[in-house]
Image (cartoon, rainbow, N blue to C red; front, side, top):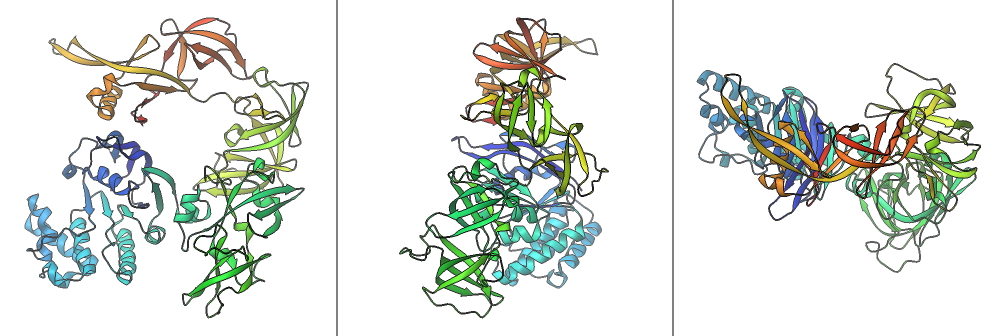
Length: 633
């Protein structure tokens, strides 16, 4: 049994096509992981890289504790089940299942035990003497699974194994594979384009599109908290309804309007507690998403009502799907209309074409997406909260509390919009709020803190700490992470940049060293070159650069990315001019100029130099190949 670690995995073909882009994931032992997405999204390519059938362009793949990038497929202790079964037609089921064990010269008694045990698990004992042509598709798929089981691998890889089966058999085999996973208690990685298979089988699901991972989450969270419009539309049957519209905040209500329709509803502002309030101005376009099960032909089922014109309906036995249009005057077909809607009705109900009906909607289940980027406006864990504040005599007054601003975050007296990243809040401190509620999001405890008339969010790292409704909570803000925006939209206080970036190259040289045996030998040394300075880097990092960039990596333009804590003032290194020192109270940072690039460096409180030399912590920085934007280290 084994866990897997995919650390910044890329696949770039010689023609420059990037099939897999920066794939990062930790897969725990015994997990059932499903890769899902449309054709060409990179899911099978990722699976083949894990199997060793595709070379990894860049990144590090671990199975257990071993890095397997350069390991042969046969040595990775994995077993793969293919879409087309790949059975030997001239061999019996028994021989097909035993073939790989015979190649390993395993004792006959052990081969016999494993084959019969696998056949018993899969219910194909009576077919061991048959040849594949005398078996059904489902039976052949079981044989392909059995051939993988007998190897007793650390990891099972399944590449769309059910796509050749009919619908009924697919449903049966889905259940069989899930049952097999529970019996074998090992790691399964399953690739499919069918979101129903993904939702019903996986402990976690990886949704991919165009080589990029869109979201990794549990089936329930994917359904309830899609990170963007693509995931929202891909997960769920029928597809989520999408509408263009606007939101207008009026006191403690938000007016929801759908463009091109008379639909308008007033909903509590609490429905939008995780949404950036700049989207509630009545002007900024948003995309609404609402699933069919939250729109009912029963006008009394939910609070909010609207009229729509029926195009047609589908009787499904358990319920009925209505295809309609919120624009009752629309002359376009439902398929073309931007205001089309799919609603649910009870089984047996009848509707006439062009009939205008009243539907009710559960707007507490409304999803919101940015109209341009299509990213969700209400993520399960918000990035930040923006709220109005005042500054007077260098004191920040917001959400019912007051904070003394350090010199680096000072602002003139006036009214501002304060942006508070979730990561800037910590427990303990001088500010006070009230415990409102707690969410458990994949093991992360997200605490909702009522402060004034707004809700702030903080992540509680202490697993033992509990709160009662209405309990007072002390919290603090990290001043280097907040920002202030004036009424004209100008940022007067910016958060400290988390990353610095410098262009550079990697070099190598062979040197002679004296070995432990007293003999001279050649050793390969690597170094990083940037801003006319040279820094030695470890052999392991040098080899990862070569593995990801090839031998031509020494001619490629690279980008070094590092935090203010990964660069230090030193006697030798990069020449830099100090523009100013940012004093955040507990911490200070020097704002330096290297050429035309600004670099921030963590410094001591009494630092006051004007010119410095900077040294990089080369063991921890990120290195990116600029041409293809590939993270090499």
